[in-house]
Amino acid sequence: DPKIIQKPKYLVAVTGSEKILICEQYLGHNAMYWYRQSAKKPLEFMFSYSYQKLMDNQTASSRFQPQSSKKNHLDLQITALKPDDSATYFCASRGDRGTEVFFGKGTRLTVV
Amino acid sequence: QQQVRQSPQSLTVWEGETAILNCSYEDSTFDYFPWYHQFPGESPALLIAIRPVSNKKEDGRFTIFFNKREKKFSLHIADSQPGDSATYFCAASVQGTGSKLSFGKGAKLTVSP
Image (cartoon, rainbow over all chains, first blue to last red; front, side, top):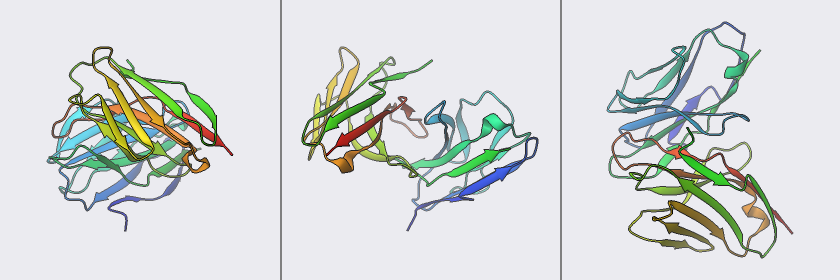
């Protein structure tokens, strides 16, 4: 059973629209992350959250906004979508005492 | 600024040979160095990791060699198998709640039978 659930698996969006990528983890981890993977930038770090607080933000654009409504949720809202935003977005998590970062299966976003 | 540099970008070896993938890093505060592998259409998964207290870590056919002085580490895959064909990412992080993994750009390994 997947312990990090990302929805949807595939997403096609129109340029200029807004989408929310969903992530829920059931590993009991307090740290959650978003990474983006594209042909141009493999596994690019975007955000990290710990105990629902933003720890690090490496995303230059304010169009990307993480949202943590619950401890095990970290959604990603993307506004004013551009074709360059097309990528696979991975949610990940890490335990307090652990070192391994676990990845969800990703949401593949295509902006047309 | 690329904090973790990886080479080569792609590598082809014959079945049974040893594949060697290399990484270097800048930040001397990094204290955790994993290698992840990713098969097409799948998410990255941890393969093996090392901490600077050791200069070598083995797990079956996979070995990490770590050189703290030179800020380099490498992954050796002995007796490579076609099933090892994947993209391999090295990474580095500082241990701590919420600390991120910084990844290299990846290396595509192809093992030819």
